[in-house]
Each structure stands twice: as structure tokens, then as C-alpha cells.
Length: 178
Image 1 (spheres, rainbow, N blue to C red):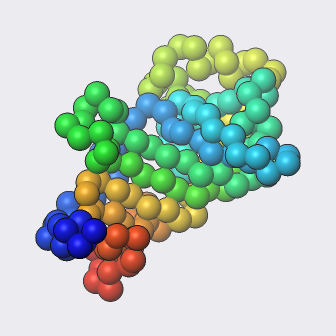
Image 2 (cartoon, helix red, strand yellow; image 1 turned 90 degrees about the vertical axis):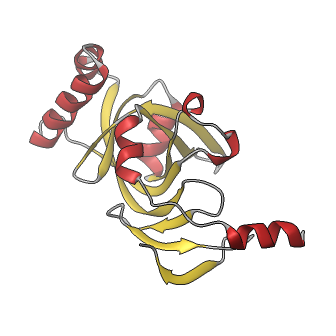
């Protein structure tokens, strides 16, 4: 165990590339809670506008009801596993968010649906016209970003890096991340 701790101390953290990771990703992983508190995981294609993550989701999926009724969600954007050399070191951003249902008559709804269509194709307009699909804005609260061994950061609501985490169990290093 001492060798692992010594190796961790020698690892230099890598510069966070949160915007790049978000820009390359097409979907987010969602961790929601059912009415009885049971965790439920899923995914949804997304876009990012004004700092939030927007998803167009159907009530046929339980995560939609969970998002609408319980509002809290953990969202993960993770690097494509085909693009990594080391599967244990995939870049990933995990954010605790609040889910807000977007009014379909609002200007923001139109912007988000147009952005989703530009990113994911013509199917988006068709889905948006279906009665069981709603747009949800996942508004970040706080989270973490990992981009390799010994390279983990806490992240603010505006997706800026707060500080580098160091140690075998995520103890926070006193220095600000650069």
C-alpha cells in the first residue's frame, strides 16, 4: 500500500479540459432516484446552453418522472472509451444538478430544441412535437472532474475548477488548481 501512496505523490495533475470534454460528448449519464429512493441510471443526448445541460426526454422513461418529481440528479459526461489508452483513466465530469422543466412556450425552449437538432439531427424536432417529451434544464450545483491518475478536481456550479484533490481517498490539497 505504501508504494501506491508514494506513486500518487509523484503524479502531476493534468490541466483540466472540461469544455473540450463537454464539446466532444453527445450524451450524459443520468443518476436519478425513484419514488422509493431506489437509484436509477440512464442516459440522454444533451446540449449545453448558459451553463446547464439540456435534455429532451420522454415520460415513457422512468428517469423523466424522477427528474420532474425529485429534481436532484447526478450527471456524468465521460470520455468515449474507444478514445482512451487506459480504461481506468477516462476523463469525466460529474455534477450534482437541479432539474428544471422548461416551458415549451419559452424562448429558451426554442433555443435548446434548435441546438439539440443542430447537434443530434432532424429526429429532435419530431420528438419535441410528441406529447410525452419534455425539455429539462439540468442546472449544475457542484461536482468533480477527473482526467487521469492523481488528477482530480472539485468543480463549481459555473464549471470552473475549484481545487485539486490529492490522496488515496480524495483528500483536498490546499493549493488552488492552476
